[in-house]
Length: 115
Image 1 (cartoon, rainbow, N blue to C red):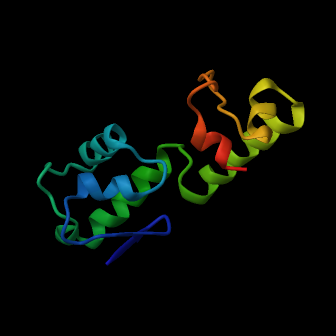
Image 2 (cartoon, rainbow, N blue to C red):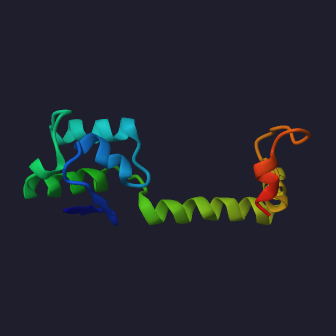
């Protein structure tokens, strides 16, 4: 069992898809990290050696990207900033209405119910 940035990587699945479980890593970034690691697409997590896991951690640290809890904190800070500045998006977020310009006359029932 391998833990990477506070997420458990399932051992029986492909490495390419299990990297997607880490918050902040998408499909394209997972492909890039696998190429840098020198791993084939059909490589499973339980086939990783200790050297390869340490190399994977080094590659992720060198990428200068934010993952998991730090990324979540960053996103919440951005939303709090929008609310505190009283931007249009912030006001819509406070009222519980759609933020990105969707119509509210017939739709947006889920956005209105979040209050």
